[in-house]
Image (cartoon, rainbow, N blue to C red; front, side):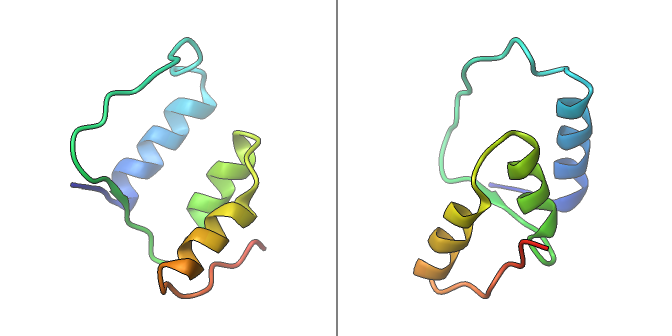
Length: 71
């Protein structure tokens, strides 16, 4: 199952508005994928939550994906 750009954008807005502030865990069933046209929205999200976007770039490259810009 994957999360497309539309759903991702909704979750990101909800996150920025504090809807997930008291959530400490997530149940995940099966393989999950984030689908993005260029990856910049995912990088922006990682920066917003205080995570190092270079780790995403490394994982993506290691799996044979194209480059994701941090700009």
